[in-house]
Image (tube, rainbow, N blue to C red):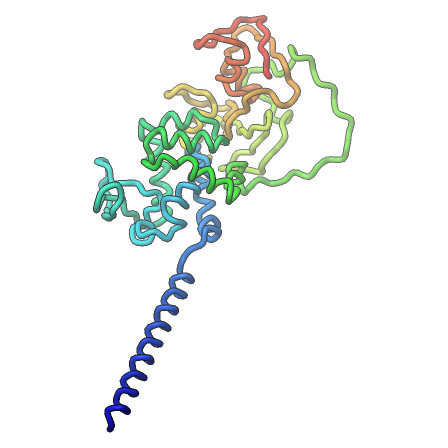
Length: 339
């Protein structure tokens, strides 16, 4: 074989090799692209987990989903793929589970490793719910995702100074705020035939019976059932009636809402409890009356808490509307503004 022919064959082999390498690189990129989870796929896969935890703990589903998308790169990060860690939660001294190490603020930091994505979502809720530094978040309006985003940064969840803006952009770009507006199990009630509305009673005659004797027939049925309880609407707020023998623990189990969350939504003290016949709100009460009731005349023995339950108005807002002191003392005959 001549030297010239030999050089041609060598050049042809080199070109063939380079072509094969190029094809492998392109194929590899294609496979990676196909394997990468999109934001839309991620939201669809995990939105119910976010909604479920919103119901139980009071963490806005929009915030939870935005954090998961950001911290896990929509499930594509190494921590998410190899450690099922979707929220970037580090080990901390109380963690006793498996771990995974990853470069973050410092090289090879310790992060929590979970058996599943579901376990990561649940631990994120427990992490916020139990940590003293995040308790101020649960005083915020659960529909105010912007306040929650800034609150997370203020509490030290992330070091990035733009963390709130990043979460808010994710929420608004993907319309995640829609996840905060009720459950997917809400059943639309057919509109009845038009009828003449009954005259609105005078303010002083509005609902004067004790909470334990609320006539549920006066309320609109919102959902068929939750945990064995019919669900009603009052001032746009969902509630159930505690059954005989119920308490905070039994309601927590039946409704799938944490005792802490139930106490907060019903303005109960840390050791407060329910009993049969009580109104138990399972969604946050409103800030003011939205159904035409303007005033309430206080009856003998009524408390501000009882009135807030009757009208579905948060006790703190009711006190603010009426310029009441921190102890919320009221007296018989006093007229309280409801909006």
